[in-house]
Amino acid sequence: MKLIIGLGNPGPEYQKTRHNIGFQIIDTIAEDLILKSFKPNKKFQAEICEGTFGNEKIILAKPQTFMNNSGLAIKKIKTFYKIKPQDIIIIHDDIDLPIGKIRISQGSSSGGNKGVDSIIKEIKTNNFIRLRIGIANELRAKIPADKFVLQKFSLEDEKKLKNVFLNTLNAVQMLIEGEPLLKVQNLYN
Image (cartoon, rainbow, N blue to C red):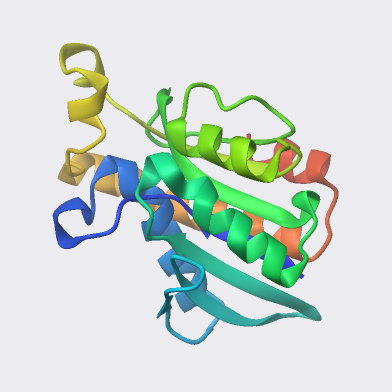
């Protein structure tokens, strides 16, 4: 069983913002894998979508706890389904990577991402896979980080994101199928 989580903030005012790229990508994964639609789950404090890909049961989740408290929802899901940390895949924005770049890692520090900090604190390990999605562009240096991440993508940025969405989907599919992490990193990092 794999738990795949997109990080973001709930609410219409955050849709399509840079900080919500995890939500956007997890929606794309659900559509592409032809899974059921997301349903709110109060017990988990998340929107959940379950299905099967190949022979692997997968759970997609969008925590509704806001980015900085993502670990609260993830801990509940992980505990309920008895999911091992190495079977968790987190997809989130990275303000230090240029738009169009993906970095895949396992067992790394949060890199200052408060959502990832929350996850590490709550599940007491960093031994999960992360797909960090670059969101920085030329405006990044001119705007405070907390304001920049809440901006919507420009049309030019959205064009660059088409390949990112496809590459992230392919990387996640390979990880679900049990491909070695190093192979996936070599293809998409």
